[in-house]
Image (cartoon, rainbow, N blue to C red; front, side, top):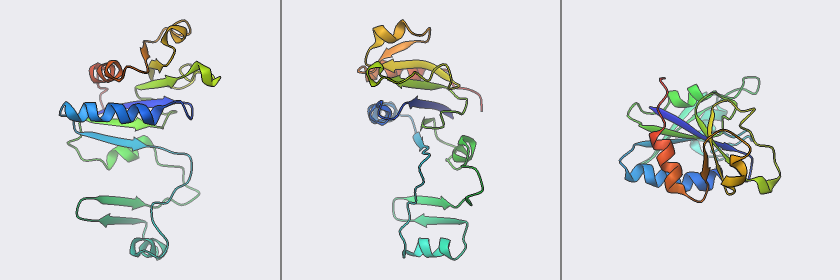
Length: 171
C-alpha cells in the first residue's frame, strides 16, 4: 500500500487538488483510499439515532452498516491523543493500492505541499517532515525558494504523474 500526502496551509487548495487527482488514479485502475485528518472536533453521528444511543450507552466502537456503506465510529476519550496515521491505515482493507492523505502534516511520510505565495504564508517544506515536492500557482517564483521539485498547480496531470511515479515507501 502506497501512502502519499497532500499538505499545505488552510485555503491553499489541497482538497481541490485531491478532487482532480483521485479520478485519475481510479481511471488508471488503482484502488484508492482517502484519509482526512482534522484538528477540529467532529461527530458524524446524530443525537437520538440508534448508533448514537449505542455510543451514549457505553460502546467504544459502533459499526454502522448499510446497503452500500460501512462506517466505523471509534470513540477516544478526551484525555487520549488523536489517533495516529498508522491507526487510520490499520482499518483500511489490504487490497488498497494508494492512500491519499490530507492532514497528518507532522507525520513523516511522502507529501506534496500546495503552496501559494499570494496567500502571504510561510512555506511548510522546511518544518514539515516528508515534503518531497511543491505544487504552486507560481512555480517559477517557488523554484527560486527551494531545491525541491516544483510542479504547476494548474497541471493536475503532471502532479498525478509525479505521485504515480514516486516510489512507495516500505510499510
